[in-house]
Image 1: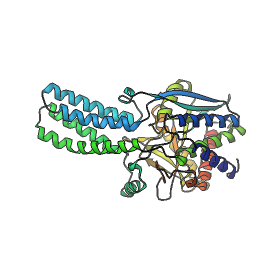
Image 2: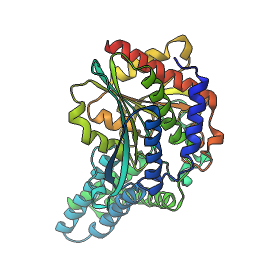
Image 3: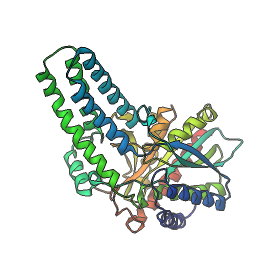
Image 4: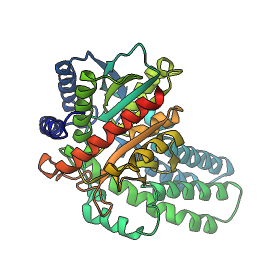
Length: 402
């Protein structure tokens, strides 16, 4: 195995280089960063493929349209004749279902009406004709917009509220708001008193308005540097590519994937799997996704979701847990992620997938979607430990594949 200090230095250097690009989803800066990643793969000795796709990444506009659309349908169509009330019920129900599908990366009903923009994935393959299994190691190149909802004090307050249990998904309240408006519209459609329907709609009216305000605030805020989220993941993918190219696994073919539009809600992984699903099927693919590796101890996601919590494949969770039990990685454990990562899209496609990330000792993800996410805040010891943990997962997967 490569000495830990060497990949850590490379990863740090790559993080600093990536943070020189303003990497908003589907932006010129994102495409320039993707070209830079492709050049790094070429330096390593791989032949990168730049795969263009189209996606509308501004989730704040998409979700804001769901909130305001449902609120407008309730206010405008909840009164009047039966046909009008039925139309209001259909509209609010459609928007609730569309919001769920968009947040869960299942389908993009309303988003598909917005003008998609070009983005790009970078794929570099390490061929192996003797491979028993296909491993995809992924991270995302784009960086997030900030906003008040991501203020560290607000996130800490939310985390402290759930110290004795799982933190609920981030978008559960907005989803309940849409269900509230859909339920109120249905009550009016079947002829129940408007006063009763208004009581049911009240929480939805308030939550939809507040959510739309938060989303508008994200829209006006700039893109953060994205050192930890997720230049640290991209740098680690490159470091693993360099080591595995020099010493390939015996039983694995490895694809190194750097996605675009992840912060637009998983657009790059969605496009990648749509394009390559048939090619991967039958090759026993395993997706190892890397997120925010420079902020504390390694953890692996057992489940995640923005609205509905999805449990990852038992094989993927068991492998990560098995390595976590080794003395070298004492303290590495699973967690339930209240947001989504690229691994979730692979899970929906029926492939074993897991995300490895890092959290501070108190369970925080420092500098998450905040302007302070700069190279200076990266924890070098975390990078080293995460790298060793990921390398060991790949070794164990290689052994099991054989």
